Amino acid sequence: MGKKKNKSTVLPLIQGIAKGVYSKILKKKSPELVSPLRSLSNVKYDAKDGYFELLGKKKKRSLTAATVKSFSAALERAWAQSSALETMGNEARAAALKKIDPQPGKTLLNMMREAAHKEDKKAP
Image (cartoon, rainbow, N blue to C red; front, top):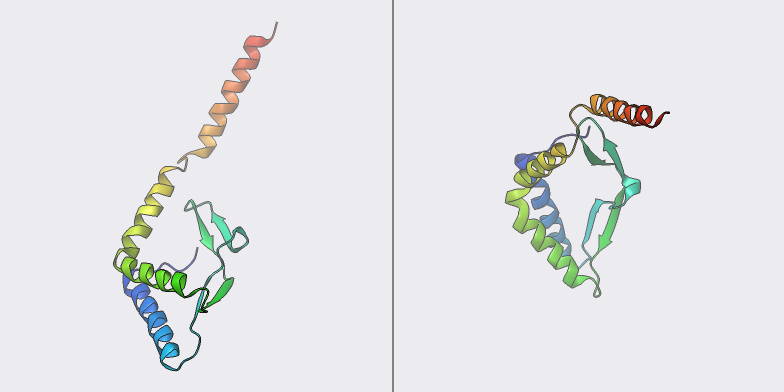
C-alpha cells in the first residue's frame, strides 16, 4: 500500500505547488502542474484495503491561453478543498470498506452450497 498522507503532509504540498505556479507567473514563464495520470493504466486494486491505489505515472499540464480558465479553476478547487482532504479520504475509505464482503470465502462457500442444493432438487 502507498504511503498514507494526512493534512499535515498534504497541505504543504498544495501550498508548494501554488507557490511554484506563482513564481513562474512572476518570471513570465508558463506555469505547469504535474499530477498523477488519471487512467486505469495508473492504478492497481488493493484487495486488502478495498480501494484503488495510484501508481507512479505523471502528467504535465501547462498553462496556455486555451487552458487558463480551467487551470485557474483547478487551482481554486484544490485550495478550497485543502482543509477537507483528510476527511474526504477517510469518508471515501469508509464507503469503500462497506462495499467489501468481510468474509468472501464464507460467502462463496454458501453460494456454492445453494447452487448444489438447487441442482439436487432438479435431479430425478
